[in-house]
Amino acid sequence: MRCCGTGESRRRVWSRKVNGEGDSVLDTTPLCRLRESERQCGVPSTRCRKNERNPVSQVTEFFRVPPSQRDHVPAARIALSVAVPLLFLLVVGRTDLAIYAAFGAFTSIYARNEPIRARFKHQSQAGVLITACVMLGALLSNLGAPEPVVLGITALVAGIGALLAAYLTLKPAGSLFFIFATGAIGSLPNAAPTWQAGLIAAVSAALSVALGLAFKYVGEGIRGPVMPVPEHHGLTTGQLWAHAGRFFLATGVAGILGSLSGLSHSYWAMVAAAAPIAAPDLSARLQRGVHRVVGTLGGVGVTAFLLSLQLQSWHIVVFVIILQFLAELFVGRNYSVALLFITPLALLMTELASPGGTSSLLQARALETVIGAACGLAVVYIFRSRSERAADTQAIPLMRQAANGGK
Image 1: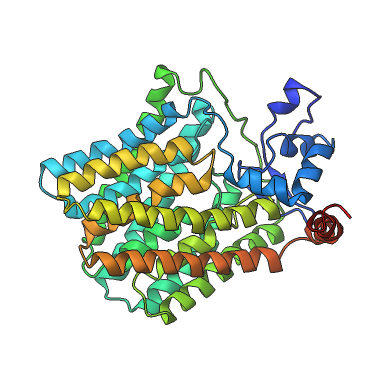
Image 2: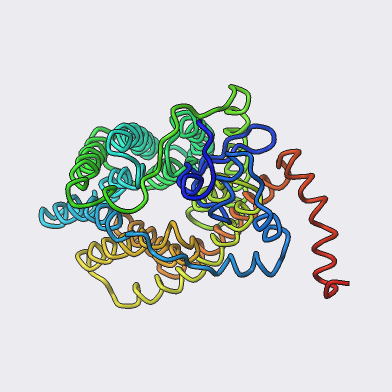
């Protein structure tokens, strides 16, 4: 990647971190917005280093919600990608198929703010991967695969999906949506036929790609930030496999613990475990994990309120569309706030596909998320890079000094 100068040009650099051991963590939500571009240019940021080591600054950063940068435009596109197939299925009386359409529509989440050609390429790639995961999940369900098999294959999907996402430089990074699609559909008692689930997901994904192209003409990417796209992931083969291994390990352990807990929906623990790993550095990963827990617990409360309203199918579809829009307004600004909408969105989709007991559903979501987030945080901390270990060593005396009132 060509190095930039200072000032405005530095602020436009694509935000991607390669840590001290060269492990690319492809995400665009750094704790300090200037930090990544300054590292790319070889210009250290004194302000960011101080903020990373200052506990008060980290707490402030946790609750900060940056100003919107025309987030309503991509949010509207993504919500429309979800709305069209779901409303069609509602009209024809097949809301039982909504979960496959919704997963296909998640293709629209990829390549946000990328130039139009890059968006078409990356959304097409993501759509193929998501459709494959939907079909794999449906196949597992139709074969009557036991839970350990579903969780084991989902963990493999987590690792391979993370590797492919890194290799293809997909945004958002990691394999969270691949895990969700495989685990959720594979856990259904009676999924649709594999071909039908795949067809619905593929059509929904194709619509998402088409809307991604069409929204160029309504302003998305013309004004506001447009992210330059890297030509190469910048990783060695070993680094790619190490990145995949972290996802496989974290989700595998989370799945086992979730299953042993006796709760339903163990794949939720796997989704929560994957969430922090894709963040750009250790501080951001730890913050992402805590955001996941705090936001999910708040979202469970929102879901409890919605489900107490005795919703019909059409109510659920409308709420899913609204929640998708709200989630996309905040997901790039504060992850915990976004999860206030993502959590009920996921739970309502689950309720639509397989109605069940509300209290057990909410309890499982909360506890499985805590289990999974703990596994993800443990993996990112234990397997952090040499440079991150060195930064921890330097930060500990400063944190102790801050705790003692600067003495």
